[in-house]
Amino acid sequence: MTAAEICVVGVGYVGLIQAVGLASFGQRVECVDLDPRKVEMLKRGVPPIFEEGLEEALADVIDRDLISFTTNIADARSADLFFVAVGTPTSDRTGNARLDYLDAAISSIAEIAKDGAVIAVKSTVPIGTCARFQARLDRDHPEKSLHIVSNPEFLREGTALNDFFNPERIVIGGANEVARDRVRASYAGFEDRGVPMILSDTSTSETIKYAANAFLATKVTFINEISDLVETVGGDIDQVARGIGLDSRIGPQFLKAGPGYGGSCFPKDTLALATIGRRHGVQQQIVETVIRINDSRRFRILKRIEAAMGDKISGKRLAVLGLAFKANTDDVRDSPAVDIVHALLEEGAEVRSYDPVAKFSVDHRCYSQHESIAAACEGASAVLVATEWPVFKSFDFAAIENLVERRYIFDMRRIIDLGAAWATHWDIERIGSPMQKATA
Ligand code: UGA
Image 1 (cartoon, helix red, strand yellow):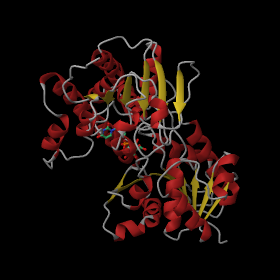
Image 2 (image 1 turned 30 degrees about the vertical axis):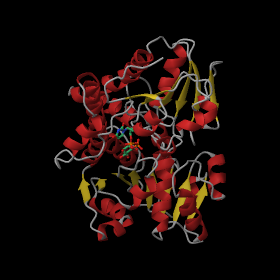
Image 3 (image 1 turned 180 degrees about the vertical axis):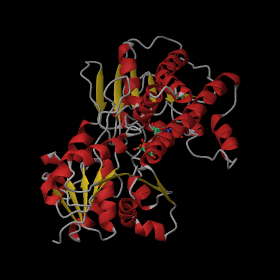
């Protein structure tokens, strides 16, 4: 096996997609992760995350000898380009991003990297972080010149591989032009296809990442607020979304009303941006409002479920369909579905859940996760659809109508076919539609 020119440090979902993607272009990639269990799995071709097409893509680059995995950073000595994709979780409710993993990764790279090596930060970091790390490297390693470059990712969970191979732009921020060009060269295939490259300083690049996620979170929150209005004044939120989204200045995406945004990125990044703004005395008022509205959305939904059922939910058995924060992922981090499960349990309900892929457990005698929709719905007074898994779209009402206590669906994702529900005499409530009078 030839020595790798590229090293990816941290093979979580961002790092692994990056590594497999670059390797599939024929570049040799060494992957380093501290977790020996993860490294062992990957060596055997088993991805530790659920992501469409990843297993096949990984097998392909392993077969072609283009990727290898290790826990020892020294194995990547030959690399002249390191992508760092370690986590930067929120440390507390103040919203500060934790940089200790990044700090450790950059320090260990600096120890073994050769003169002139480039360290491209893919992790989402507070604005100013790359410049600070650059100053520290210059101070601590005067014997060699190492360059930090910011190269944020815009991958979505569930479509990450496709997003990697079809980027809408590539952002590379760095003070040193040669270093930026080294990162750029690793994406040469995209540039040939006309993908726009944004070459900037590190602060601009870091800001683009936060601004993009905050803008999208704002768009989702905006349509959710309009959806609340539609519930009261009448109308259909999907048509409203279509009606505004066809205006190319607005665009059709991220206008699907739902239980609020979740996942490992929007909640963390909006909070971090708000914190950065406050720290610099430039309060990000829109983003702060978005966070507040999104946080309170779970409570609002709970109230709506209660109102629609015409009763307190305490003592009722409820089925929650979908636990992942969105479809096509097994990720339950900051999932609205999970928050709603917690809220229902707190209200004294019994919750039976089902998700085609995601697992969630809580130590509570009134909670259980089941292997099928039917099992979750057994004896339920209401079926709550919390994630837009395609399998729920073709919900077979007839198959479970005799299992439930009451034929009532609360659809937080607006995916259930209304005609089919009505044909089988189910009551159905949806986010973004005026409340129906529920029949007991
Ligand atoms: C998001 C961004 O879309 C990616 O560009 C970015 O790279 C990534 O964060 C990151 O920073 O790593 P992701 O968290 O995978 O990706 O999820 P999205 O598909 O963006 O959805 C985020 C949340 O918004 C989900 O809870 C989803 O259900 C919700 N959403 C999204 C809606 O409620 N309505 C919509 O119309 C769109």
